[in-house]
Picture (cartoon, rainbow, N blue to C red):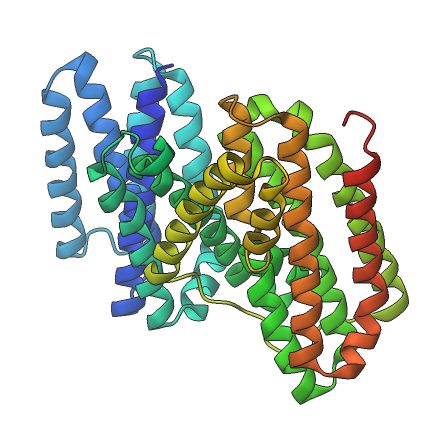
Length: 408
């Protein structure tokens, strides 16, 4: 099965869902699934036309015209429009199975089944989505679909480390992770407890989560839930970091991954202890976050480019020791930039694996320290007192890995 075909089908599905959600929010009509299925139907016709001729596309238009006439005339009152479109899609899926595209047929069947089954979750997503959220999602789509293709894919700038296409590709990666976590939060986060709130908050932005729950803690005095959520979000960051390394520099994972796994396990143990000792109930405050705006994407792109330049300059003028100051500073507010920059440099052979792993752990320690300070400043002394032992233990674990990790 050609990978290109699957990418085209996935893109068609995503575009259909995007337009459908926007129209459903704007017009309050159940168009999300219908637009998605229509787009999928068009993609399937186009795919089939490659092997069966252009008459397939013509047949698709004729089918849609007949369907529209039937609905407008009232002859299909007892059959929902979604069901009719789903039937057309499955008709094409059947054709796919007999035209050498069995893999694509399986994928499309699974998507159709999920769309038809997820009627209520999609409805909840629309009800929970505001105009600002829709605007944010559209902006984030522009980040990947409009800006990325027009950027030059050549090294530029000092030290030859700035490739505009690669820099923005990292922005698209981070935006995609945050957007996926935001969608999950909209579907499940508001009905779930502290654990899911902390996990989703860490996937979207652990720093933003820390700021939000700390401020709310000062207002509601729900310091136990707030402390656990901050600790969980700070833990999930390392799972996100490992995922990013696996995506952009898989070859470095055997060298960089094990100490990060160890720190993830240590922080996870601390989070479990905090959850058992401090909090077993749902948070009393709304912890939802909107997806980052296009301004946030631009800021991350500039930060990532700045880290690339700083790492290259620091190594040339200060040696490997100067890189730790860069890692500590960049890790204060964001772990993604130093992780992506370091793992790519290790993958390209510009930095030893041991040094790269230590840099990421240095950024991690800096990030934990910064969030501890934020929690104390915004949430008050009681939150800081509750959170401090666990965060200090996490910092100590990271420092121990930097100093005594056997492979280094």
